[in-house]
Amino acid sequence: PPSVPSGPLSEKSDKMAEEFTNLFGATLCKNGAAEVGTKAVLKGKSHVGILFGAAWSGSCKQFMDPLVKVYKKLVEEKGKSFEIVYVPATVPGRPPEDDKSFKELLELMPWMAVPLHRKAIHKKLTRRFQVRQIPMLVLLDQEGKTIHRDITPAVTHIIEDADGDSFADQFPWAEKRHTNIKQMLGETFLKGDGSEVNISALEGKYVGVLLSATWHWQCRRFQQMLEYMYEKLTGEGKAFEIIDMDFSADVPWLCMPHKSHEAKQKLGEAFRVEQCPMLVIIDPDGNVVTTEGVEIVTKDTDGECFPWTPKPLYDLSTLEPEILGEMNDTVTCVILCEGCDEATKQSLTECMMPVAEEAFQAAKLSGCEAGMLFFTATETSDVVEQLRVSCELGEPTTTPQLVILDIPDSGAYYLHDGDNITTEEISAFIEDYDEERLERKELLEEEEEEAIEGQ
Image (cartoon, rainbow, N blue to C red; front, side, top):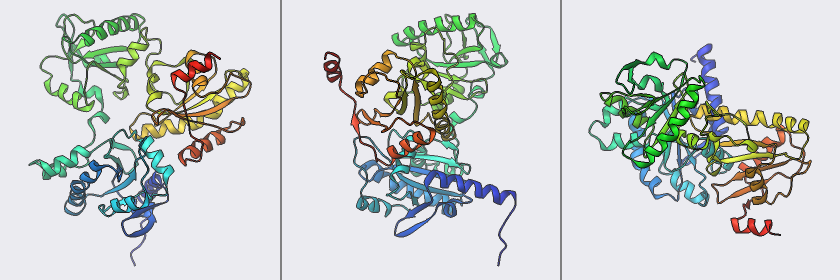
């Protein structure tokens, strides 16, 4: 019989298969077959696609036929080491898939799926990969890292375009945004006086890539705010520069030359520019810090929170601009402890940090923004007070309170039952949320809040 391979390569393959087991669960299923081990099915695969969809979605069903053709072309014709795993997406306001509709959808798929009864995994993956629309096809490498957040356009391209077959040969089409953004900017830039500046001037600096239009009133208004922040930060000696994609003699920062058509096109594609202005902040290594630069400049006008790098854990009492607005789109876990003593506040922060750090690292691996945000509320503020009123939590006491906010789901929230808040309790609370074992409540409407405040 053939010998079982061993050594570093085999150990690496086992480790990668274990990563996929942690991601999808111990078993996967396929149409008309019993559940099989995730590790065995995905071991050795160089790329894995996660297909987020729903049986109730007509667009998902329409996407099945071209995707099946592309899957067979890549796996059978091109010999690519590729597998797809279907995950029923959890969409607020939509019913979950039932057994009948799930089986009907599986009949269209020659690939694997996360079993229907694993609701918590469906929810975690939908949250982790920030699924905003379906169908969505995320592409992972063999280490479980995201190399493309959505390759549904590539599927359409292979089927419909004349160069589709040669395009299939280029699989896995690594996403432009995951490359070094600084390397996409070009070698030289222009000052307002027309003199050239080499890219070496950006060494060690955070860079804001500005996509704007000088003829648009909103862009002109934003430019005034940005100029104030830019001059303040550079005047304080902060390592910050702006690269404007359009040349203007009237701005204090650097601009891309008129001839940089190709670089501008690649940047536009990488960030899927749909409106302007747009300000993308990148770190000194060329990695994206945030695409929400416009909101940051609007809220943090003095640049006090520069360089706005994401963190695992925030304090809701001093809400930072890079996270403003995210709570409306992202599930949020909060410990309210304004009435506790300083030692308890510190202890609670230390309890939440491991859970927050794990989610933060998972988001980085996924190439997405955090799927769950984590906060402590150590002091009273307008935001904290509003949260207490909306969740009917009462006034602060010496007993901390733990709550999960799911505002995208029609303002849902969930309260932790008990005052013993530990790292293990926080993890268990989140697991109960994913497994839908918690009592669902809804945030009070503004009129209800006013009625309570008037009492």
